[in-house]
Image (tube, rainbow, N blue to C red; front, side):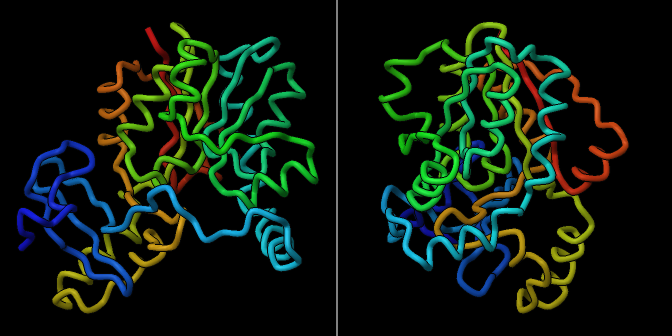
Length: 269
């Protein structure tokens, strides 16, 4: 049982103080909140990283080995955004922009696209290859909060909210930067998929010795997955941040592509 000194006994979602270590991984422990059933890893990135800021030969090889991951999702994400948002002349902010590929699609549609990317390696590659200037300051940094309140028509967090140290702080900050009537879109892994639920059962039956697929959902590496949401949890969090969910229609290709994800949109009243 955690002590009062355990920094992870406080739930990252509902802020109650009774979260307990529940699932053991190789290099971490997944905590579970008994109040809201939130699952989160006992790891935070903080503000430091040992990542190289320059594009070394190893850095280029690493980026090129992963550049196509999720690339097929960007055109589908663009179609989802266009269901509710006219992009011509829109101000947009992509939080966790990666290499900036989605920003390029927004620019092609006539939007002014800014991006946040904490990874220095990805920022350097994006600048060199695509000519983009991605910003290292996070959404809750004074850089954004003081200079860009109620500025953006569109904000996107594609495969991001599961990576951040504090998802509530991130979405609260994003809501502050959104114009009234503006839209926020996100996608994130779905905790209700079969492989996660099966892993919970196997872990429990093995007395915590077999994590099964849980090690694919969480990672203690820098920028790794720190929490996995249910649809109910992430929807409630958006509402807590003053945002109102709007329907997202997934057609055949999008439905297949996002079958293991939660896809949500919300607007600021």
